[in-house]
Image 1: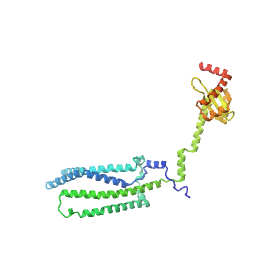
Image 2: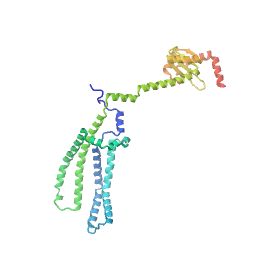
Image 3: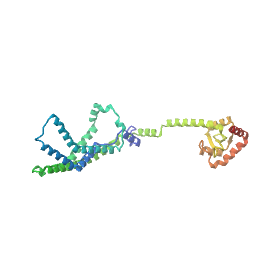
Image 4: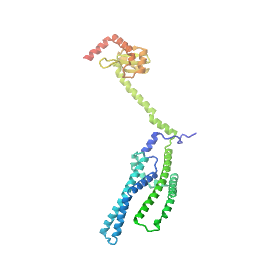
Length: 363
């Protein structure tokens, strides 16, 4: 039998959402490595002719002026600027593509979710003791070692035959032109990089699968945690009870003020009481201004007697109004005739009272 403190339950949606909000989600650097390498290969393939042209121009200009070069403090800056221009023309597109690819890889793993918690400054991230302690944790260190070893073996197995075949190429044993050397280097880099990319993709898929499993395992919950989260989602019963009490108190104060203005109180006779009011000028039908059962019914009758509001006993009408109508709601059409008879009786018996109220209203 599982212990209450043992994490045996799957993480709830709220637990997962909180983890993602804190930047805790399955991720692996291998996916970013694959994206960076792939983007580099694409840029090199698209810009290979331009890069070869820039390098050829740089080599020709350098070798052509090698006998006339004068190294002085003022000329070093010009030479350095020219070199940086050549380097930028070749490297900046590749670096830009790699940076964009790394951002896209990270965004895909985080499902384009920006975690503000990760942007907060924390001194603990600079604590060398914490970083050293993480290095000696057995399981993460073992996994990093296994991933590194797997990466080396997979890449070695995929590229060793290609490298051996390249080393046996005739270009190493015969005179060739500069264009053939550049073409050989381009094809060699493309061939080796393609196989490295395939190997890294396999490693990235395996590592991400492990990270996803570990992430789900770390978010596992105990039975008690699931119960507490369910309570917090539904609301604390004590808090809900207190809110209900306050709402009932406010509602009771409202109908206490409305009962003196009621035209009649229909009773059950003792268990239920419903106060009705009807104003021909503002209402389409009689409206319920207060209702209650047991002690509340007794309180309604006491207030009605205090302010001389007529009380009429009618069990079917009282039960129907109490069960199917809310305070402030008009009576349903099914009881129009019964309520009309009650009001007609009340107006006839208390004609003098309603005459005085009419005089006050018109004054």
